[in-house]
Structure formats: C-alpha cells, structure tokens
Image (tube, rainbow, N blue to C red; front, side, top):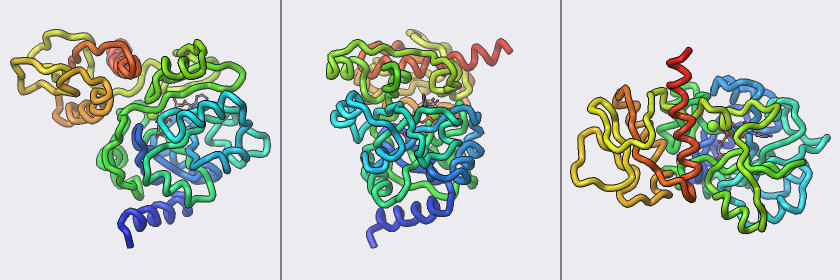
Length: 317
Ligand code: TXA
Ligand code: MG
C-alpha cells in the first residue's frame, strides 16, 4: 500500500477512537481531534494545557459538513471561493442544531473554520465523517510547530500519532477574519490584509483585542520561545543569538539567517523553526534585525512583538 495512504489510515484509526493526532497544514501543524466529540476535544485542552475559555478552529474538507454547522453568508462564500483551501480562517455564526462539541466553542455562538490546503490533510479530511478541531500543536503560549519533529518536541510520548507532511510551507498561522455581525481581521497571517481589502473593495481593519474572548493569538503574551527577544537590532551583543534577513559580509557563530535577501515569505517560513533551534542551543538572549512592515512582514512583526512581550511581563511579575 502507498505509504501516505497507510499513514492516513493510521491517523483515522486514532481519530475514530477519540484520540488526538498531529496533522500537517501549510501554515503550522495542528493538534487534531473529532470536533463532534466531547471526549476527543477535551483531550486537546489537556495536552496543550490550554484554558477552556479559548475556542478552537475547526477544519473542514469543503462546504458539505460546514453547511450543517454554520450559517453561511455572501461575504464568506466570496472569500471561500477566492482563498480556500488556504491559510485563512473564518469566524461564522454557529447553527443551533450543529453537532460541534461545546468544548470547541466554549458555549459561544460563533465558530472559527478553516479549509487547509496541505494535500495529506485534505485527503484525511475527505475520508472522515466529522470535521477536525485543531489548534496549533504546541503547548499553550509556546512556539508553533512546523514539522512532525516539532510536534514531538512539544508533546513527547503524550501524543499518539503525528501525520508527517514535511515542513509547513507558510510557517505562520492563518489569517482570521470575523464575518459575523462585524467584519474584522482578528489575526494577521498567511493571507494579507491588503489583498483581502483589494479583493472585497473594502477597508477591513485588524483589531488587536476582542471583547469577551480570551484568545492567546490576540493576547500580548504568545508565540514565545521563553527567551527575551530584542527587536530592530543593528548590532547584537556577544551573548545574543542574532537573527537576520539580509546577508552580511561578516557572519558570527551566533548568526541565524531567515533569508539572505529580505524575502519575507522565506522569513515567515523559517521564523518558528529558527526560534526553536536557538532555544535548543540554550541561548539566553535573542536579538533580531528590523523586518519591513509590509506584506506578510506585518504578520511576522505582530508575532515578534508578542514574543518579545513575554519576557517583559515575566520579568516584571
Ligand atoms: O493556521 C492556523 O490557523 C493553525 C492551523 C493548525 O490550522 N491553527 C491555529 O489555531 O493557529 P490556534 O488555536 O493556535 O489559534 C486559533 C486562534 C486562537 O487565538 C483562538 O482564540 C481564535 O483563533 N479563535 C478560535 N475560535 C474563535 C472564535 N469563534 N472567535 C474568535 N476567535 C476564535
Ligand atoms: Mg496557537
């Protein structure tokens, strides 16, 4: 049997048994479980040490199952046709008779949904009779994983199975757009805000804080390697791991390149992987070069700001 197919079958076996499975997506790896099962979804919160209040994104193959769970509107259909499958999540109204587990939504009336593009995960979703709740496969507030080994790094033997789909192509989480009563971007990510606005001929804003939702993706303390990070640095100190996006004449042992010529997509793809490596090499401090705040750079800077805040807050308390 084809290896991918037999791996997908393994993943299905675990998922049907209400277990959590690591799945590859083009953004980051997810920690997936049957979104209709209370038992399976409660395991996600336990493994991730995630506050119960923080709702999960649910991953679908297409609109067939989604129509049973969510109220579909015109703006959503337009964006779905343009960007899905792909790195964008939509917040929609939940239908009253939806089968989604209460754990997923924390009893709220909205649901974040996404249609990932990774071929293996699409093949998996197509074979399932339920959608997959899947937050990023990291322990709460830590760095998101972009490979199978990263997921194992986070959970060790506590995770039963990880479907190996190679390194995530985008390397940064999906853009989240609220399409319920208000239209807002809740998280910057794989699809750029300016492209969405151009496509819809709109002026949708990024709101950093939402009322009534505890959302680490939006809180200041997130995406953290637990190491203090200095931003916009030209010259690093001796004891800092120095992250760069443009080739320098003189390189040091402590230099880590995300890209050699300021290619921001490459920067996004390599960011989490590099932070994880630096953490493994036991650096106590990180410095990072200025990253242009355009295109996906805006999402990168948003993540870096949150990561740098971790230590500030930590050292204050
Ligand atoms: O790229 C991604 O979106 C990855 C891959 C695995 O799909 N998933 C991901 O999930 O990043 P997570 O849980 O790490 O981040 C999802 C964010 C959280 O900050 C959560 O609070 C927010 O989405 N969220 C979930 N449901 C929501 C809802 N109904 N309304 C507003 N925000 C919501
Ligand atoms: Mg996350």
